[in-house]
Length: 393
Picture 1 (tube, helix red, strand yellow):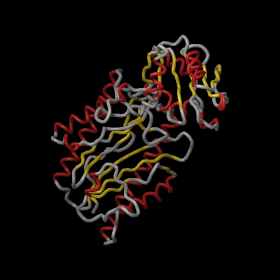
Picture 2 (cartoon, rainbow, N blue to C red):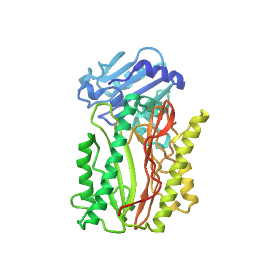
Picture 3 (cartoon, one colour):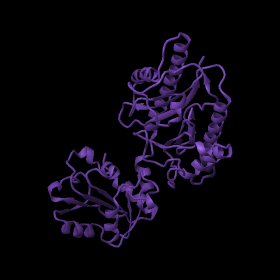
Picture 4 (spheres, one colour):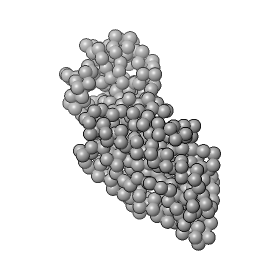
C-alpha cells in the first residue's frame, strides 16, 4: 500500500523536517520501493526516481521518460527527465525551497539497515544546498509500528511457536529413551511439519543445534550438514514464524535443552548470565516507559551486555541483544544494539522486538530469546521466559 502522505507530513512537522526525499535505483533502496508502493504498482523500475514529500504542500516526483508512469499512483506533480543534465535540473526543481530533508542515510553507516542511499546520491543532494538527515525514526513510524490486528497475529504465532518448541523437546527426549538414532535435521524436519500444522510460515527452517553447533549462532542443519544428538548434550532450538494471512507479523524464540539429568556447571553458569542479561534489558525498557521517557535501542543492549561482562563472559559475546520484528523476521524498527552498530532509534509504542542475549564457546553455546511488544498497556513480554535449561530425560 502506498505511503499515507498526510500522515507523513504530520510526522515531518513533528520532527522539524522540511521533507522526506525517497530515492531508488533498481530496488537498491527497499524502504523507498515499499513506501512508494512500487511493488503493488507492477511497473519496471530500471531507472532512478525521486519522490519528495514536503512537510506542507503537494508532493513532487522525478521519473525517467521511459518509466514516466511509475509514480502515477501517488499524489503530486511530476517532472520527467531523460538525460543526466535533465536529471540534475529536475532534481533541483523538485527540492526547491527545501533545506532539511530526511533520506535513507545513517551517519558513518552507524545503522546499516537504514543506510540505503548511496554516497554519490547523498553528495548530489547536498550539492544542491540541502542538509540530509536520517529517516530512521520515520521509517519506524510507518513500517515498524503495529496495530491491534497485527499484534494479535504476533500473539497467535508466539503461542504456536511455544507449542512446537515443547513438541520438539519431547521428541528428542522420547527418541533418545527409545534408542532411536536422532539428528538435528530429523528434529528440524519434524518442526517444519508442525509449522504447517499450526498455519505458520517462516523465512527458513528452524535452527536445531547440538553441543558445539550451538556455539555457532547462525548454524542451520541441512540434509547434508548435520550431526547426531547424543545423551548428555546441549540442544538449542531457535524458531520463528508468522501466520499466513496478509499483514501478519513474526514471533521469534530460542530455548535450550540438555539430554541428561544433570546439566554441567559451565552451561548452568552461562545460562544464568544470559537470563540476567535478558531481564536487565526488559527492565530498562519497562522502566523508561513507566517514567514516560524515550528509550533507545542501544540502551537496552548496553544493560544486557553489562550483566554478561560483569559475569566474566565479555569475550563470549558475538552479537547484539535483539532485533526488530515485523512482516519480515528482522523488521525495520530499532534493534537492541550498541555492539554491532550504535542504534540510536527510539523503541516506539506499537513496535515489537526480540531480546536474545547469547554466549558462544568452542564446545557449546547458550541463548535465550523472548519477544516484547509495546502495546497500549506499555512494553510487555509476549511469552514465557526460560528460567533454567530444560532436562530432556
